[in-house]
Length: 203
Ligand code: SAH
Image (cartoon, rainbow, N blue to C red; front, side):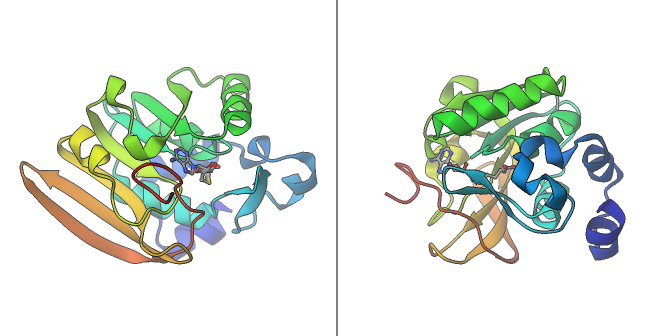
């Protein structure tokens, strides 16, 4: 999967490739979908949600440019797969998931894999996680109408956000960099994510 779906399509960041090498995607899927774990496609994880396509996760992580000393907020942790990848890239990961069943399943999987620097919180991640702010990086696996203000407020100066933004059915993957009062937005291309449902997302 790493050679065919990631390296061949321009994912070159060695730390990102190493994280993919370390995290078994099948551990985040139920038995029915385990055989397809290394295909480059999104798959159902229950509760009407999906685990994202590996290439899109890799592109997101490469653009996020996580450093070993960083504290990261992962909004919409779903199965916990991206949270596990982040746990190898960052010092500390705080994930938020609104569906309790998914959050507790993700926490169990992370524990089973021996991940100790990531926590899954239950709540509305469109409001960020003020108790643990500021974050050096914020990433989201669900599409919002726009970048929530809460995330910008909770982002450290010099920090970065990568998130899908736009209409409910199809979005643009955005990279936002915070330099003092100034925000730089870079369009990374069209993507399709499940909606971010919450106070600063979709109602
Ligand atoms: N990156 C995840 C993909 C999860 S899909 C993975 O690796 O599995 C997006 C997730 O966002 C879903 O689980 C959905 O329940 C969650 N979500 C949607 N709106 C949310 C919100 N406001 N706060 C937290 N989680 C949310």
